[in-house]
Image (tube, rainbow, N blue to C red; front, side):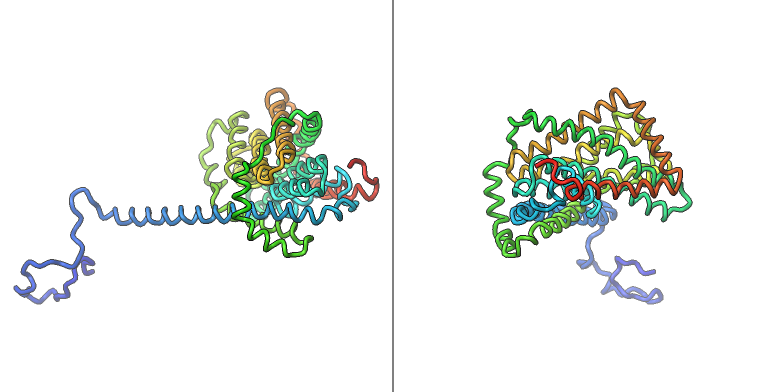
Length: 405
């Protein structure tokens, strides 16, 4: 094979021509000097690709931020337009119906964060009371873990030779554990809110930031407000889903198979796992992502379901971070207090479970998990309850009438 650095075309059996062998300036790049290496070329190319990837991530972040704030403002305007209709609707007439709406809404979009943002927008737009907003926010968290069960089913179908009960059982565990944390958390959180313990907290985006929002997002918002008022809320929901898709390109990507390949001893300890769950959900801004990564880990035996209990608890707390940001962007102090009350209550319940009741709680929740996944009939019964219960709550205004304002 000819040398790629040789630009002459002299046959091997032809004697060299003296004219062609005299010293001359070669057009070919000089050989690498001392301290340099041919490997520097691939390294430079890799660095160039890294720079391009960084620029791409920044672009995705800018687009995601623009769409996120636009969606929040759009849903607020849409809530104002829908307020009269929602107030008179039997499907939105009490705190139980909004709980069901948030719960089922999270199933539909396979995420709790967009529905949580909708609940805050409805409150700021005057379409929901403080209690209804609080229960709708709680419902969105109860339904957010449904994606873990769905992924567990799909993973079990795709990997039939593996332990199907572990992958599906992880989804059952995530939903059950979320319920036993958020149900008492709802009661404690609303007690905190109603007692006025957080009235002194007036967090919101600064006037400068809000002015910047009006300046940057105002033209697009003005243009979209020309649409019928009833379309603004669903359009805002669609836009915020797109913004989360762009944000997924920027935030750390978790590969359950790869990250679980080196099992370490601290995975068996509750408090490190709790902190890890807090960190992962805070970085990914999604409890769905943070919990779904557990499915392949459990299926391949890298982590047992009972070891993931503290992790799920931690993720269920910091997943409210993006909802808190949304409340601050809306510029409403009470909306911020609603989110904080939920976060404080869930944190308190989780800490009590971990510090005082961890042994009995773990044994009880694992017995329920094993009972559900131990039979196909019981598993389908569990899934049926997941849909029937929030549907009963959603329609409560029809069959029991308004209970609270």
